[in-house]
Image: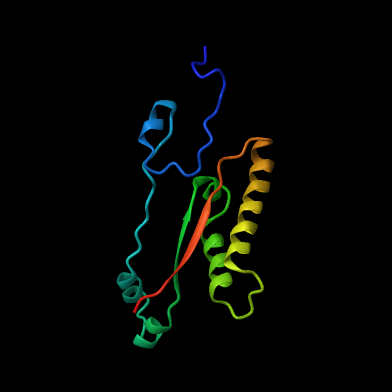
Length: 126
């Protein structure tokens, strides 16, 4: 039988929680590192373009990225942070993405959905 009585573990902020490995939690985060110098070299950015670049960091759970592409997440959050025409704050953009991911999970899996977490931060290089 099921040693946990059919219970499920629901943790969206479990990075580094190695104690929960016994119930199947993967506590090692997936990390992508993006080298800004390589980006500018590949795109042959001028010094003015480099100075005008706008950067931000996104941390999100797989519950977000399993149903929404990183590109869509980046576009939505980038517009909320940097577009003069945006009427949506970064917090509202995160909330909209969470609601969209929730609906997509409902369409895919019925009442089940993975944990959905997201955070964004503007990066300043001086």
